[in-house]
Amino acid sequence: MTSLNEEFAKFEKSMATIRSKLSIPQKIEMYGLWCVATRGKCDRPQPSRARLLEYGKFKAWKKYEHLTQDEAKKKFIERAKSILPSKL
View 1: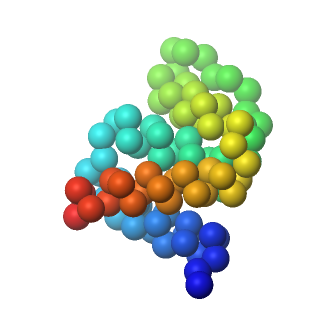
View 2: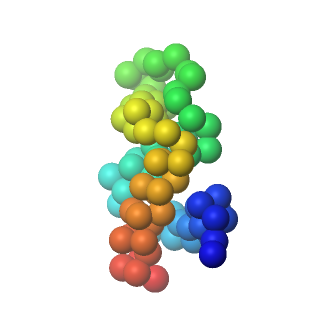
């Protein structure tokens, strides 16, 4: 049986190979989940809204920070499973 960390690593790698095929909303969602899964709660100050990319990443991370790291890993895997078949 595969551990959660091993399964997460497998899907993390798979998602990296198709990143360019993802829609912007999919990229944002997966980034937010990945941040919580790998780093935990957001520890960065909110960037200026004028810095669109940085602000978008910040918001994505904050959106999922209510999850534990394991919950975020499970949700990342769940979303990856639903995205991957359509992108391969």
